[in-house]
Image (tube, rainbow, N blue to C red; front, top):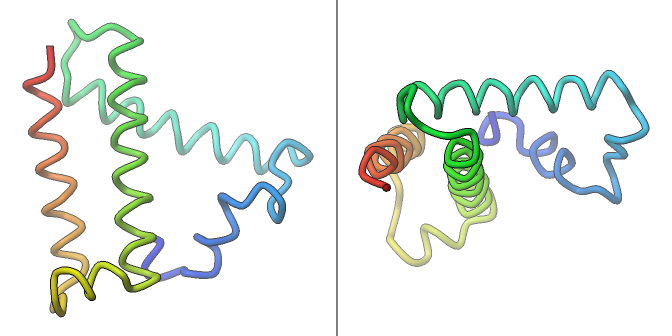
Amino acid sequence: FALSNKGYFRVMFRSDLCLIDESPETQRAADDAFDTLLAAVKEILGDSASIDEIRIQATAMWAIAHGLATLLIDGPLERKIGKISDRRALVRSVAQRAAEGFRYVE
């Protein structure tokens, strides 16, 4: 989403520009998106994971996704690691590694 919608991505998490608490529809969309993330993390961790662990891991995944998106959009990543030929493949690879790492957290 972020790579295809840079403007939207930048505005969505700027509380000074996007007054999410003032729009029930926007708040619902944000809640639905986070619930989707929680469900995905629960599937990765399994039924034995506590809600606290699911929330912690979801927060970590969210931070990874948004951090990587920001680095890709604003460009400092390529200055550090070189030209990225396939950004979407990089995103998939980072997400896969993060998800695999979640399985080993106790």
